[in-house]
Image (cartoon, rainbow, N blue to C red; front, side, top):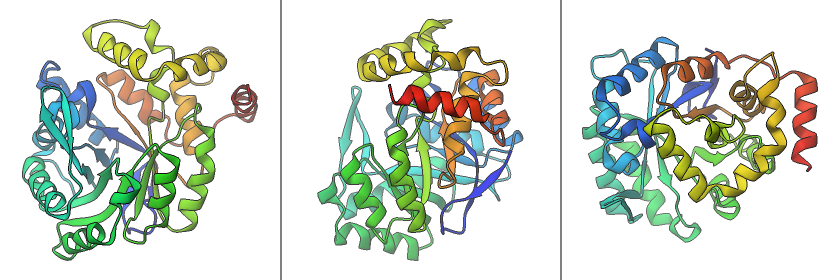
Length: 304
């Protein structure tokens, strides 16, 4: 596993991060398997674990806390989010008021069983919510020693630019993958300002790898249903990149990760998984260079 600086935060993270979210955190996914994946990730050198209070119907944070209990966390960056929460019945609540953010961070510390969070990201804020009162609340948490670095994640171009411009935010998380090459310019601007950049959805929800055609169990049906509901455009775009599934040098997933990590401004690619083999293959992508001819083919396909 290779490592990169998280911008100017003073933190170093593994190129491949573990996304503790989605099906991984649900009660229907066996606890032993979920914990085993975290332990295997640690053994593989993964040091970035990303979660949120609202992920997996509120179950992801406490599950990650249980998985990390008793492990050596000296090099581990535990990252969570604030501003959204599980509101029951599959609903997500939002509250970016300073008192709510402080309460969210304090509750996350308890659920995760740590004394300090390496990174807390505002979870999909609106541009108007990025105000001085909010930033002052974040700085108070930093002065209390509860959080090392702050950031925000968004898939909205205007909000991403506001995050990059905000002095109080150290990290930006955005959707960067082979289907989102237009994010590269924002990553360059963020890196120029010393921001750490986390690539969310680096595997494009598995669309390039043809995961919709690999239904092997309930977990696959769960992900397929979500993809068809929320990412139909990505499914269509991914067809242009089907050649990645037939290259003998690396898998489509590894090529996708190599593409993301080829951008020098990216600190880490955060990937979720529920299978050990998938986790190990993702980890093996760290340090793999994307062959020039494959990079050229990807560029041509992106142009349509």
